[in-house]
Amino acid sequence: MQDAETVGEAWLQLLADRGVDFLFANSGTDFPSIVEGLARAEQLGTRVPRAVIAPHENAAVSMAHGHAMVSGRAQAVMVHVNVGTANAVSGLLNADRDYVPMLLAAGRTPVLEGGAPGARSLNIHWAQEMFDQAGMVREAVKWDYELRDPRQLIPATDRALALAHSAPRGPVYLSLPRELLAMPPAEPDIPPARLAPVEALGPDPRAVAAAAAALSRAERPLIVTARAGADRRVPALLSQLAARLAAPVVEYRPRHLNLSTDDPLHGGFEVSPHLATADVVLVLDCDVPWIPDTERPAPGATIIQAGEDPLQARYVSRGFPADITLRASAAPLLQALLAELGNAAPPPSRRTAAEAACQARRTTPFTLDAPPARMSMGWVSFCLDQLRAPDSLLVNEYPLHRGVMRTTEPGSFFGSSPMGSLGWGLPAALGAKLAAPNREVIAALGDGCLIFANPVACHQIAAAENLAILVVVFNNRRWGAVDRATRALYPDGFAARANRMPLTSLEPAPDHARIAEACGLYGRGVADPAALPAALRGALAAVRAGRSALLDVLCDG
Image (cartoon, rainbow, N blue to C red; front, top):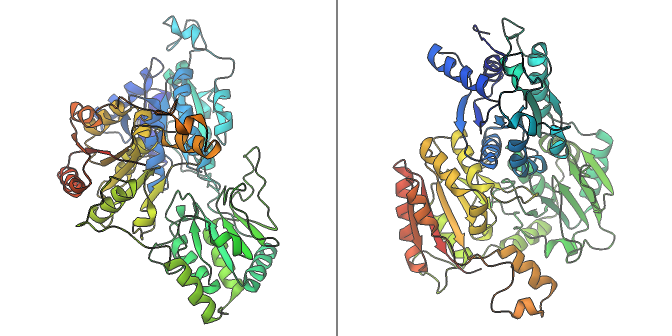
């Protein structure tokens, strides 16, 4: 292993050999062998992952998440024993629910109380030991293990990466005791990897035939998806299937770009009114395709649940019907359905009606030269869409109004995990920028999401790593989701009538732009809708000149 002196140094070389580009690290007293290995690699020219210091563990995990959603490859994160793991759990839950491959490693308090390199030397080494450190993450990872012998280093790491990349993808956890990291490596060389991941799940031909038969008989088919576009072959295939069936495609709470908004059968971002009249519904890689209390399929409609985990086996409770269930990766499934359906086409009148229904949902009430009287989130979304670079990457943690935006390119939009653990968007955008350094990256965040992201830590990373991204804060100075949920449940209640709803206000609001400026970023605030286009142009100019920028937009909604 190029003369590695320790297991820690050998592990770094192994990660690089297996295609891991970055190690996002929040270090502690379990890291000396990692720190020494990185220093030796730098001075000796050994290839290891690029180490990125993350001053908070949620930032480290979310940056790895952001990189993987753009690159498709697991990156490594390392945190400090149990306390670092505890801080990482929130971001790890997001990655798990969104099927994001990631290798999360954590140091482990030394096992020995003395007599070996790396044995306990600080008082915290007694307090930080747990009976089951990995127990904190077991519900959020596909696999966990504690390395126990240097001879396990290569097989355990290869297994971790193979499982992380196997469909359905997800994070894995490996704990590394301090003394073991300080031991000499067991192998002099790194052998070729011989543990290939399961790249895709193929569909059952009988289930494909049943689904194709139901869809071909349908008079009003509907397709609902949230994340099928994680595979960038899917938007084109989904467009072909929609055209073959004359089926609107609804991107319901999307986490990826599943279909170009230019497609004539893009049915918008809400299942209403399509769901109530559909006679066959294909639910493709969508954990929650509608809200049963407010929207229901037509009586007798056939429901096809499809995807790598169509029944969401790890969800404790989920009662959506599945008359036909297809377990398969999205692209092979769509290819199989298209082949089974053949060249038969729906009546032209049905195609015309479906396209007209989709087109009716595309009205955009804005133009740049006619600003509205109030700063709505729709206006901010529209202006951002009009002024961003054509190939920019959008990272959305809730506020974007996609209906006023044009998004067409596969792999250009990323939404937050259905887990909804806030603070993901800003560090995920930084990770996306590392994966696509030549693309313009934009993070759209609510002000609450920004606060949850530990913004000073993230701004420090942006400055230290020279990561120029645009952060647009949709600042309504409150927890909007809590406000809306309370009004929905108690529309005539005391909270709805209160001057200030309890437990929702974020006032007095921090000056987010000045906080960004204090960290060396470009920061500006804007409250006038007419001033927004110029403010966005100024922030984008800073980004395009190589400086990260934050625009704090005071808005309603």
